[in-house]
Amino acid sequence: MDPHLLRTYVTVARLASFSEAARELGYTQSAVSQHIAALEQDLGTPLLTRRPVVPTASGERLLEHAGPLLLRLDAARADVVRMAAAPEHGLTLAVAPTALGPRTVAALPAAGVTVRVLARDEIPAAVATGAADLGLVDGLAAPSDPLRLPDVAPLTTRSVGEEPVCVLLPESHPLARRTGLRLGDLVDARWLDAPGAGLPLAQLRTANGSGGFRPALRYEGTDIRTLTALAAAGHGLTLLPRAMATGVPGAVAVPLVSPRVVHRTELVHGGSLRGAAATMADKLLERA
Image (cartoon, rainbow, N blue to C red; front, top):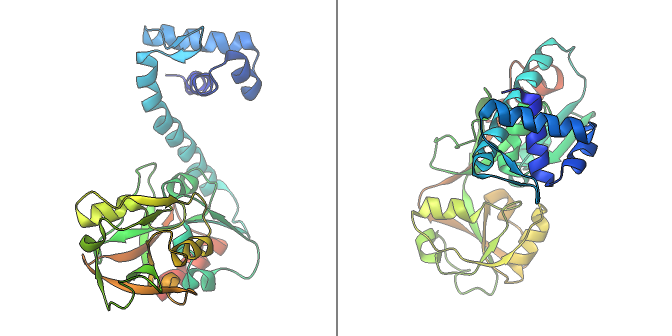
C-alpha cells in the first residue's frame, strides 16, 4: 500500500470529513477523494461510508494496522536522518514523571536541554520518530526483570536503576504505623488513579495477580506534588518510588514488602549516541 494514501485514509477517518482532512493535509478535497478511491481499489473493498463519513468493518480493521505501520515508517526515516545528521549540541529528553528523580536531574547537562514529560507508552515512539534523543521509562517489575515496552522500532534499552516502592498514606490512616504492607491486603482500599503521574493501577493488578484496586479519584495530570497532596489529604492511596514518597507533608511512606517488586527505570535510545545524549547516557549508566 502507498503510505501517502494510507496517511490520507487515517486522517479522513480521524476527522470524519473529507474537507477537514484536505485542509489539514494541504490537499484539495478532490485529491483526498482520489486517494481514498485508489486505496479502496487497491484493497478491493470500501473503507469508508460517505454520509456520514465513518469506517466500514474493513476500514476499522485497516486502522488497526495503519497506526503501527505509519509509526514504523516515521521511525525508519528518523533513524536514517539521525545517522546522517551532524551531532547536535542540544538534548531532548522524554521522561515519565516518576522517572524524573534526583539521579536523572543530576545527570542533565548544564544547558541546551529540553525535558518533555510524557505518558510512559508514548516515550518509545517519541524516541523512535526523533521527537526525543533519549527516553526514560519506568514501571513496576520483579528485581532485575526488564520492563515490557511497546515494539515500535529497533530501540536499545538499558537499565539505569531500581528502587524500592512505598505506599503513600495519610498520617491518620489506620495502616500508617505499619513497617511494611502487602499489596494483597490493599486490593479493596481507596486508590488514586493517576496514570500520567503515579504508577498505574493496571501495574498493581498485574503485580498482585488479581483484580480490585478501584479508584476513588482520578487525576489526569503529570505533577507529582499534586498527586502526593491528594494522597496526604485522604483522597486515595498511591504507590511511588521510595525517593518520591518520602518526606511528603501530612503523609507516611510505608514500604511494600509483598510481592517483591521494584521501581525500575530504563534508558531508551535509537542507534549510536553522540554529543550531549551520549554524555548523559554515560552518567546515568555510571550511577546505575
